[in-house]
Image (tube, rainbow, N blue to C red; front, side):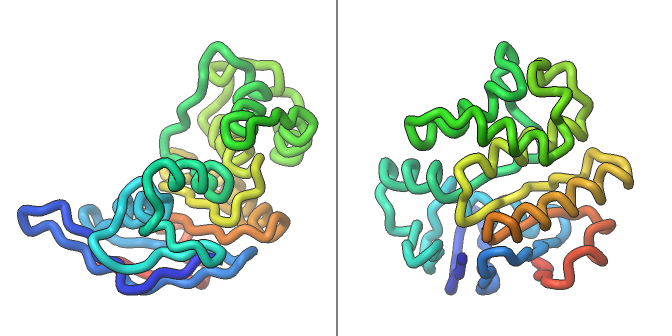
Length: 209
């Protein structure tokens, strides 16, 4: 599970964010909404250990990542935090399956090809394993991103605008997949979005104002 307390971050020049406290248990989903400039992406980067707060606590399974030195923070992130970004970035010369396997090797030093295959098949990509990412639709690429984020069974899964570039059918499919897989793996899921279509999908929400 993840919990935060009194998290404050400043970019300077009057851009200050005081974020509401967050608690999400394993298997549960929190939707974070808010207008442009209200700190949604900043909060996601703080929760993912990509930024450090000026003050406050960010606890994942009892570890306050805000106090970890950079080297340990990178290692902790690789093993405990999965990221699904708005724009998927892949190694274009590798197949879909190889991209997911690479994520396990980078985080743990071990390859997990069978696990990658099983995840991709579960996400409806059985016939896409040996294709290059560039040969997939945007919706399919987003599902590969989900598989890559889940391959190490993270304690926390962060999704940044995972549905904003998708049509209604694919948006709801991806949202339901994220929620279902979070429950399956006992992962705390936080979706950061301005996509109004998701508001009725996830009752647990905070709105940054």
